[in-house]
Amino acid sequence: MKIAVFSTKTYDKDYFETYNKDYGFSFSFYETTLNSDTANLTKGYDIVCVFVNDIVDDTTIKILAKHGIKLIALRCAGFNNVDVEAAKSHSIKIVRVPAYSPEAVAEHAMALILTLNRKTHKAYNRVREGNFSLKNLIGFNLHNKTVGVIGTGQIGATFCNIIKSFGCNVIAFDVKENESLKKSGVSYTSLDDLFKQSDIISLHCPLNEHTKHIINKDSLELMKKGVMIINTSRGALINTADVIESLINKKIGYLGIDVYEQEENLFFEDLSEHIIQDELILRLMSFPNVLITSHQAFFTKEAMIEITTTTLQNIQAFMSGEPLVNEVI
Ligand code: NAD
Image (cartoon, rainbow, N blue to C red):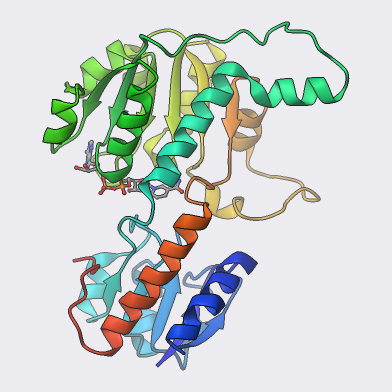
């Protein structure tokens, strides 16, 4: 069976080529994302392998089905970019990598908090220029602060345990409560109460119809003045225009984002010689209290090995007719 890999970066290719030695699959690597305009490239393949910003919508899936694609292998956990019902209606199976490294993402959320708070990114640049002044570098102790965690699955739970060790009071909201977190001192509360009580809010729920724009004008209204908001989950959890408004009126004190609603046109690319047209990201980039990373929370050596080997195992299971343990149903 032939496999077309989309959104390929050199590091993806390197990891696949290294670990494919045990499998011998036939891969073709495309740098372009998969979407309805590029789906014609899938002619002659049996399987497509995609990542977070490939748009596998109804139109794309119709083209995949016409070309005889039988499996969509996601090399990520989230599957909000795939029309699951459309795939089902064409009998195309979907597999994913459900938990390649919750630590990678949770630790990155922590990195965003510590950087925004203690301003190490600014201190680094200052000292390199011989500026040893502490002016405007003041932070706050994390100890005794209330941290609200929305979504306490694999990543959220790992994040709760990390931030608890900083002496924070951790409160959480999830549609399904995690009993072992409760035993360790995390208390679940309503979403509104979490918004009201938290000094720091970290988003770890999936993007779906219930969570889209969960951070919006109304929820921002409930929050403490100077709140820190961290998003390492999916960009559309945040209404960017509302957040910009709250940065301007100083309701939000700090914003750390690894994901952005319109990231597919920007992230993972070197655009340093281009004129960026996205007005919202340009505005976000202009605030001194906003830290943006380009969807790199997953990007550790350990996670890349797990992503690659699980994807290869998912494909192997499909080819040999074994049960698909990581199927998206
Ligand atoms: P998970 O499925 O283990 O956990 C998600 C949790 O969110 C579950 O406990 C679920 O009950 C909860 N949830 C569902 N609907 C909710 C709602 N309406 N309100 C509150 N909670 C809700 O997933 P995970 O592995 O912890 O990943 C979480 C998200 O992180 C993924 O969906 C993905 O979008 C994102 N992610 C980002 C990166 C990155 O590099 N930035 C990497 C991996 C995953």
